[in-house]
Length: 164
Image (cartoon, rainbow, N blue to C red; front, top):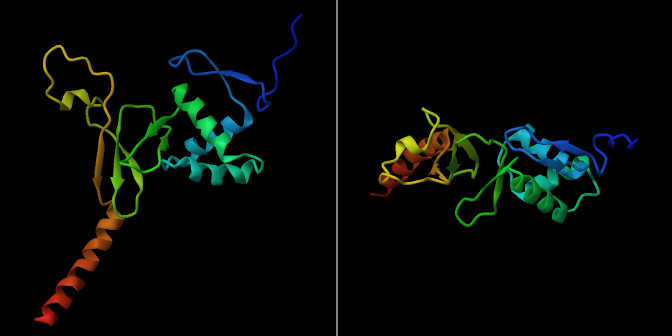
C-alpha cells in the first residue's frame, strides 16, 4: 500500500492543473504564494514587486526563488509574461485572449478585452495565415492621469499668456 499524498502546502505536494492545461505541477508553498498574490491583486507586478509582497507572507523567500516560481508558472501556462518596451517583465494571471493598456503617466497596466472575444477578427491577414500569438499593447493615459493632465493644461496656457 502506498503512503498517502503529502498535505497541501508541503514542499512535495503535487496538485493537478485545470483540465484545459493538462499535466501536473508541483505547487510548493513559494509557488502557491506567488500565484495567490498574482490572482488576488491582478496589478501586473514585476518580479521585484511580487518579491516584496510575497516576503510579507514568506519572510525567508529570495528574489531568485520568486523568479524561479514565475518561470515555472509561466511555463505551465498559469501566468502570462507581459513585456512593455524595455521595462522589466510584468506578470498577468488573466489567461483569456486580451491586450494590455499601459498608462504612460503612472505606469499602470490594465487588461483590455475585445468586444467579440477574438483579436484575429480585427485584423486583415492574407488568406491562409495561421496566427500563433498576438500581443496587443495600447499606450496612453489612464482616466486619473488624463484628468490630472487636463487640470495642468489650462495653467500652462495662462502662464504663457502672461509672458506676452
